[in-house]
Amino acid sequence: MELRHLRYFVVVAEEGHFTRAAERLGMQQPPLSQQIRALEQELGFDLFRRHPKGAMLTAGGEAFLLEARAILDNVDAAVVRAARASSGSVGRLSVGLTSSAAAHAFIPQVMRAYRDAWPQVKLEFREGNAAELTEALVQNQLDVAFVRRPVSQPEGLSFERLLEEELLLVLPVGHPALPRARGHGRPAVPLSSLRDERFILVRRSGAPGMYANLVEACVQAGFVPNVAIEVERMLTNISLVAAGAGVSAVPASMQGFHAENVVYCSIKDAPPALSAPLTLAWRDDGQRPTLRHFIELARQGQA
Image 1 (tube, one colour):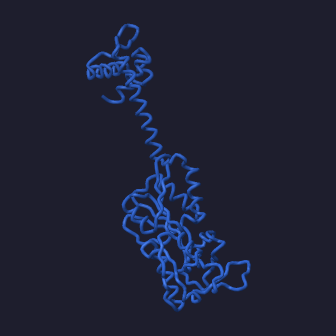
Image 2: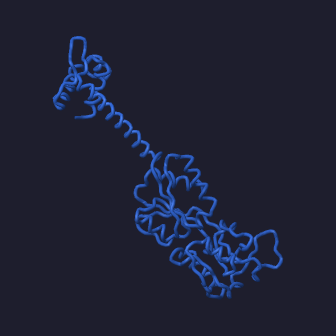
Image 3: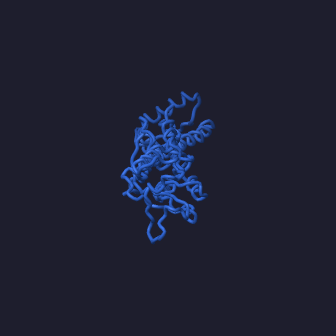
């Protein structure tokens, strides 16, 4: 039994006449009659009672008409759903975020633009450090992720740097390295003035790039930093600085947190590598339409 047989049957039932049904279907009447007869033979019962003025449904035909219409309606609906999924207008997309990436205004802008453009795509979110999110992409547990510096670039994943921002020092209010006379701009502090400080950094395993670059910058400034505390999330280190537990460094987009207890400072004479990129990572597996649209919007947002 083929779908065309069901469509032929429904049209004949609606017209009550083989010739009119054939005209509606754009075919000749004899082949239509043959197709309906073949369908009846396959079913094992008559669908119509033929008479000179047309055809009437049998009891079995009336019951089969309900089922045939339901099948055709389901097929039509499935075609619509499949077409919408193929275009990326429906579906789901899982997005990973590091805490420092999520703090950047760029992220909610992209999310809002995507929701506005594709409101029927369900967005799912997962927070983690760069290492965790990269592994989730590898394991197909995420479709796309915003990280800072990639911890690694496994085969099968694509990485694209969207933007770069300044890395700022975070010092507790009243820290002696802060300029005594504060102007209206952001203070600048040399790394060398922090040689005796306790540094609070995100664990090297979670953010090895930013961690290593800061340590290298300190070495170039003449000292090996005392990394006294390692935390899982970048927001935690700001809270610990506010509590007086040490000093830290974060991307400039995070400078609104605990502003009453900490001071965000530029790094005087910072080397070029000492910055905070925002990187988009995704599975390079043919790019489902939902993912492709997301990548395109992220690229547009950085322009």
